[in-house]
Length: 581
Image (cartoon, rainbow, N blue to C red; front, side, top):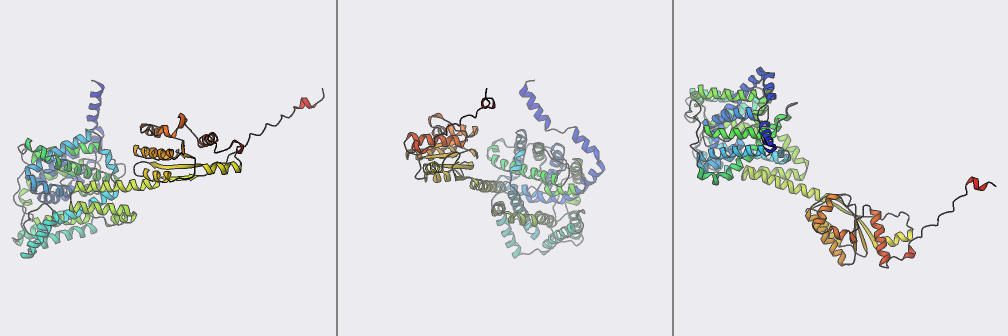
């Protein structure tokens, strides 16, 4: 096996489950089984609700939770992550369903899975750490608003209006409700949401979502509430895997949505895994393995009619809080849901859609961390601006565009802050052994400037303005030892400034140029301008002495003003010389 093939094989095996994973599963299986059962109870109404919201039906949500949840549990990079359909992904899928239909969503999910595996192979998981906290907070706030608004039609008991913009659909649903109110649906949705929110404060460990849904279903059946529309018939089991939905001719047009889905799946899964790490001690996820596991999950999910999946923050948090220690818990969650699909499909089909809407409304409300948002908004104006822009873009545009906008604005503000740290300061000449008279003459003709901080495209033009405005000097010494970084734009601007000064008869010398800066300066032709006659000055005193020599040669500084070196004192006679012979 060649060295290249060996590296590829090593890379592939590093993404697969290992002996450590098996040892973790054996550590406390009873605790993990109980945690997995609890998570399954919490996940059931969410999987049903997100399946309905996506437009592919409740059965698609269940298939996703079972297939994607099990594969991500086995191959993912987190011991505690729980995967399945999520509200954030539903937000992206709704317009895709409207444009390309259900088969388009399945194809997009398959393509997104392949892209996630490719990202894992390229070790792209580590870049999640560069997403700023205000972007994440704004993204979460926007998703919570969108999830809540998506539930308005079912909560009001009206048929979902046409449209792919959540604000437009919500407004049309409210108008339809105003013409023919359905207070039964509203009552069920509000009651379920209220029970969940109040129960979470009273007994956080009790899965009040399933309790509220069961109660709402029983009330609707016993009272014969015809206005409470149920989910409808569900298949008793998973469909056989198939690729019949795949249309090779449509792959080109679906590439853009697939990239958006893959980006969101990567972002939300890695964010959820990071949250799980923060809630525990000693647990650390592997971001590349997590992308690999999510990729395999999204490749398999469409084969069974499931929607694209991601790591689910809410279910992962429940998993951690109920004591999970290994991936056995999330695998148990998927197995319990599979049993429900096969054994209890007729009962599940009677759940009112309004009750599921209440579950998702409460979930959206609980996603908003008011304290965290308040702290982020008070941190700096830049953080507050990024948070608001990301949230508004999430609500009005698209989740991926929202993250891009947030990252661009955050990057621009960060560059602005870094650029403001760059300074050009005039520094006094070192007197050294010079007399006061000579120092005055030197100060009259020589100016030393210290470049401090980054010299790059966002800050360089200020240096050009400040340097070229210097007047009544013959030599400028640039002290560059404190330049932290320099790019081609900074070197070009510096070159332009030096050329303008040279045309005015001002000599420019530089000291303390670092090796990395020398390469950039030389590439744009600025180094030869800063090193007249090929001389390089390591220290500032050397450059000042060269400036004095230049002034003497041009006759500006008379040799008479330069103090002569004092004559050496005669050596004292030795003791042997003082004594008479």
